[in-house]
Image 1 (cartoon, one colour):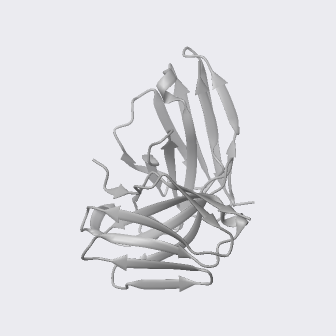
Image 2 (cartoon, chains in turn orange, blue):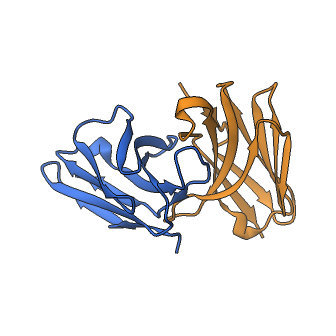
Length: 114
Length: 113
C-alpha cells in the first residue's frame, strides 16, 4: 500500500516555462513533506520542505504548496531550466515514534527542453 | 562531495558470493540509514541506526546484514543474494532521528547474476 504517490512518472517542459510536479498522500499522520532531486548516478539531494502547519513555502525558483484537506502537495519550478532535468521524489515524515522515517514516492522524471 | 561516501559505486556478484557495501559520513550525524531503490518502485527503507544502535529492521531478509561499528560508518553485508535483489542501494545520514533533511550518498549499483 503506497502512502505517497507520484502518479506522473515523467513530465516534459520547455525552458522558461513552469514545471508542476504533483504528489498525493494517504496517511493523515504525516506532518512534514520534502522534495528531493536526483541526477543519474548520484544520490537524492534535498530541495525544499514544508510543514503541515503551512500551505506554502518558497525558495528562489522553487515553491511547494500543501493542500491538507486534499492530501496533496505540488512543487512549482519557475522558470524551468535545463539543469532542472532530474528525477524528483516527494517524501513525507510522520509524527510520533517513527518521526525519523521518510516515506518516498516513486519519483517523477522532469525533462526541461532548451 | 556530498559528505556521505559509498563504496563501491558498482558491484556485480554471483548468488553464492559474499560482499559488503560501505558507507561513511563526514557530517557529524548520529543516525544512518540504508535504502533500496528498485526500478519503478519507491525508495524503500531497510535499516536505521541511531547512535550506533539498530532501531529498525524493515522486514528485510536475513541475507542482508547491517553493521554500524561507529557513528561515521555503516556497512551492509550481503550473502546468497537473489537476482531480484539487484538494485541501487543508498546510504543516508541525518543529525538525529527526529530531524529531517537526510544527506544521501551516491549509492551502490548492485547486480546479482
